[in-house]
Image 1 (cartoon, rainbow, N blue to C red):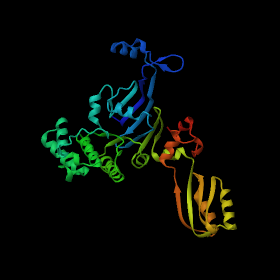
Image 2: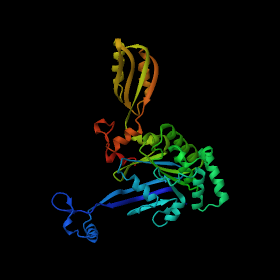
Image 3: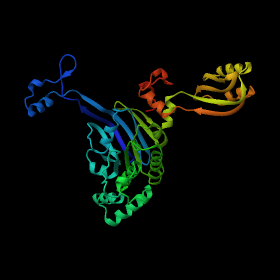
Image 4: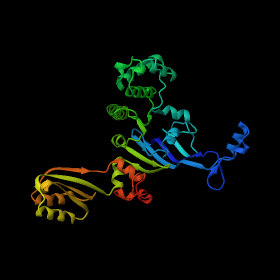
Length: 375
């Protein structure tokens, strides 16, 4: 029985560096031996430098029916991983399975279970209508005419392109072109869909519509497994059941967005605003009393003109009970207007994990040992 839609086990991919020869500091080309094209090829073969490991033994599992996101900075190994899953690149070590089929030994069966939707892959004829383009691909996929027409009509209506199906492709907006790509991908009805930057190039409204389409219809209604690579961390936090953060060819975090945020940061902050409050001696004593509570790191009163107390910003340990804090505030006679909790975002976690901001700005120190507890 197949337990996972996608499974990678100690996956390694190496790329050779450019052909160079070491001498003193760095590497250099010895052009004296190049007298012909054959000589150039011989030089390249003879003087290959060391290998670069784009993927360094990564392992992960994608459950059937979930939306799984892969996040990472440029050069982290995301594109290499996607190409391996699409059978475009062969890995050097480890194993990869798509619906139980080995990517290297059973590529045809893998491609029967997985369809990639890449933003740069068009493949549509601008002189044909959207419907005619889909009919062309239905023919390539070997669908019978009646089956193809039924599937095309269903998809155009399902995706929301029925009214524009007979317009020329060149008149389609970027968002409509992306929807037609999705129609083409769903033509074969594969259980797994792979997206590389699904909303890149779309405006805010079109991106929101496309995310809703993937989440509500493709994932929930159709029950498809979605594997997506994205730089949009808000998108990943909203859509993905689980995310894996990859950096320099290694997965350094893999869990739900909420669990990653909670395990990364030990504290949280919240703000309280008041009705007609003033920062007098009694309020100063209240702040001092709050600061003495175990687990409270800082209490910052927000004072505007004429010592008006607009509110408090409080940084606390994640496990602190708020009832004691509220009891002290209410005892002082202050009338609370609003209470807002501020949780760390996935973007803050991503920057802290991948070292894209100074460590002293992070809420907690990031170490390799720290991640071993929950990877």
